[in-house]
Amino acid sequence: MKQFRVIEQLKLIDGVLKCKTMSGHTYQKAHYKQGDLDGACGAYSIAMAMNILGVLDADDIYDSSAIDKRTTYGKLIKTLNEENGLYPNGLTARQIRKILLDNYSRYVNVECLNNSSLIEKTTICIDDNIPVIICIRFNKYEGHWIVVVGYEIDDKDNVIALLTLDPGSNSPVYTYWNGYLNLIKVPRKTYSYTYTSDYKNMVLIDEGVIITRK
Image 1 (cartoon, rainbow, N blue to C red):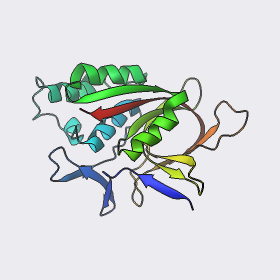
Image 2 (spheres, rainbow, N blue to C red):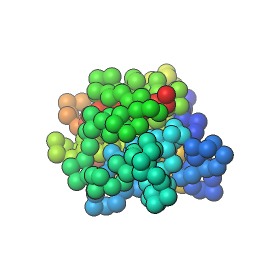
Image 3 (tube, rainbow, N blue to C red):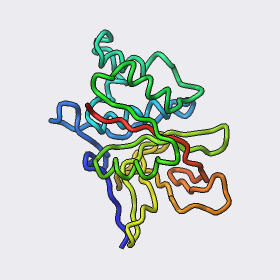
Image 4 (cartoon, one colour):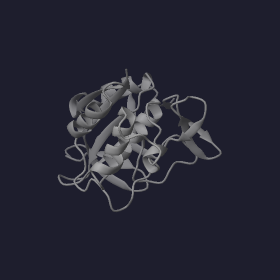
């Protein structure tokens, strides 16, 4: 029988996907949608993953006026919110790693993944309730960062899909994910995986980032 496995931090409360704040006493939004005119899916995915891990309150990115920019936390918020504007050229895994290690290495470890190890390590992380940021490519010019929060297995326990939070799509209302990356490859295709969210594309799985708490 097919099964879905999703990290434990996510809760649907009154139709809104939420996770706990850093204090652990209240809940906040878990999904954030990027603007239509920016390339900031990497920054949004960083915020969502760290939000879910409980090492960032992503609402602070939207209203950082009360955050002390001299603190470690404040420096990270400033970097995500201000320094790179709309990220018109996007972010690579190495750039994401540098942002986090330059600003928040006291609290998190960061590992970059290449596509050869990505699916196996991602499923291991999901079993440990760790979201994984991955980049899918639509063609050689366009890529997109999404956050894996679960996976689907078939009746033989084979992983057949990754369940994602997509910053380019509307927030989920009935499930814990709003994107579905089918891992059954189309033969003899470079862009061989089907990805479905508010849109549907054939994609290549490019690279990934694992963020863990220290």
